[in-house]
Image (tube, rainbow, N blue to C red; front, side, top):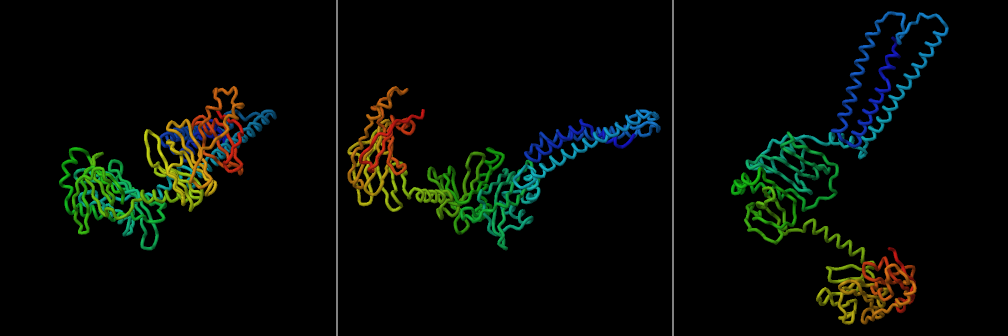
Length: 511
């Protein structure tokens, strides 16, 4: 039996199909993950391939010892006829061709899926990349100081420092969390720390530990280091408070409750923040001792805080640096407000605290409708602008102000709708708001276009006026049947003299 027949049968189409399935699953595993699904399929395919290779090889070796006089197919080759020689010659060529096709198929599958697996290892392109990245960036650190009541977080940081030098000043933007049992044994840790090394390099560490599944802390060297340190995130206050906490033995008066209410105690640090407390709190003074404060019901506490709790029950809070800076949320809110003001001050309208409507004609010139009285869902307004104070711009009418539009410092409009938002009135001024007059629109001219409409509306039903708008250099206004329909079902009018007069333009329905 010759070698080409051995390979021909070894790499038969069934085995090629099994190989294809194994490679396809290997690619899916590398691209999308899902080891629980893919690995069993790959293992079965691999087992089939190994068993077939061993079985066929043993059989081929057994047949190899057959007497000379037969070829690899087991047929006699004693025949001298030309026809017989031609037949065997043709069989050899067919065998070579089939073997070529089998090897081509195997190489094609290998290169095709091999390249796709390689692509899954390219950064951010597949699960294989994240698997390799984790192997490169994650290290394990033994937790030698595993009793929180003996060493606090200083023991944790000491263990980390032994493995990888930590900077003197650390920051925890996502907080620092530790759970421990009543006897002090640490059960879990989660923290994201970063800081600047002595050589100016900025580094970050993501720390995770679960006593049930981990034999050591998993520390991921993180390349996504914040660009700037936030003073609200500094870890030093937590370290100082816990150090004083352990020295004063504050835990002893709460220890018995932990055994009764929960298997573990949670310690959470979120930096400088505002929090409403439901339990007593202790303030760390400059002398390093704590002053106890009663429960601060309803009033939030701002400061660096370390909270202790059993499950969902807050036990007590340690605090320092009370009312010494703004929280990150307050800073973000102020920045968002400033950005918003910058965006609208080039000309636009916005609500201010729900009671005022302000319109900026330009950055340094604004108009305002201010609520001066309210009753039964309706409000009375005054109008204010630079050098202008109009105590009753809507001429005694009450409702809800809907908008302001000014074309220049003198010419503009204000809009008021009733409490049910099914009727509104538009007012016009030519003197900067000293006086406003109601705008009369020729809605009756739309009657001809409303004839036979599916809703059965007449022009009398169109009494909700929208705020005017400018389009292609002309002034337009829409009039609907109620607030909800003013942009979908309306009569619309056009003014070419700045709002002094209006001409009917047509009827539009988008239902």
